[in-house]
Length: 366
Image 1 (tube, one colour):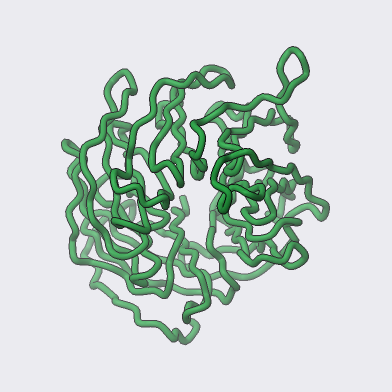
Image 2: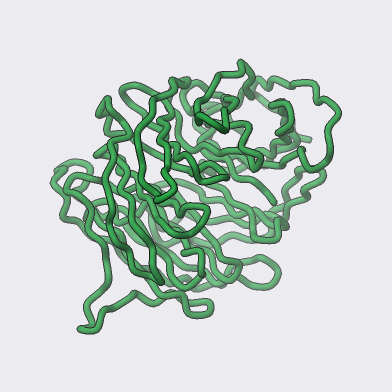
């Protein structure tokens, strides 16, 4: 195990069934002392956690496991297009250890998000302003020649929307489509999934299919509801969530709800509770916190309240049993643990945390 140059708080683990012991991989920024990627064991029966192992990497700000949990994919979020990359690690879930087995250039600067359906790996490149698609081989490694799709501009923010930015992509629950957030054009792009390829969707007239969002929206992350009937996208600039009804690839806009009442222009992530009754979003820059929205049986969103967090909450995750929410608070250098009330959706700071330098991503290895 590597020697850490950071402070780690270890909590004693109580006796629990093995199904309560979850394994997460944690992505960080490495400019202020982080070693790279970490593996974390979390007990969802009592909220305690410990670090298992780590591997050296440069700005692995987004990490995800493969569908079978045998590999971990990580971006290297650096600006030059000729050096930004995705790295593949063989992952030992029992030990939490990593072994590098492959690497490929993204062809776009500052890769910031990854998604996979088991056949392809899709990388969103923020500064590169494009979406890069890698075919996956049986051994988890990446095909040598990726295919890239450019984003566009058109948003009113002369500073933050002046250049194309792609921030996130997600596969539809039925596996037929992929949606990507075209940040600077205030829209969602749609692609058809055909085997190990993405094909830009086109309508009957041959025009590309996309879905408009409000001006000055800055779409960032996208999330489908657990039942697959709706899609929500958070606006980094607008501080709001737009909900769409999903029907065989088509999106029908139903509402827009403000989720950051402090207008910080730094909303980041969103996730539904496992039962689909609540939607949570992270907000930064003015009043750092996690906003809570209730979801009606018909799928309508209603703002409930904002739970204050430590500084700069970015990515967060909710445990499968719904009891805990873990928030990666970048500038407080910790993963903050909240307990969650399944009836009200409200969060309570447990006082438990894991100290890491600049954590920004948490992904569950299933």
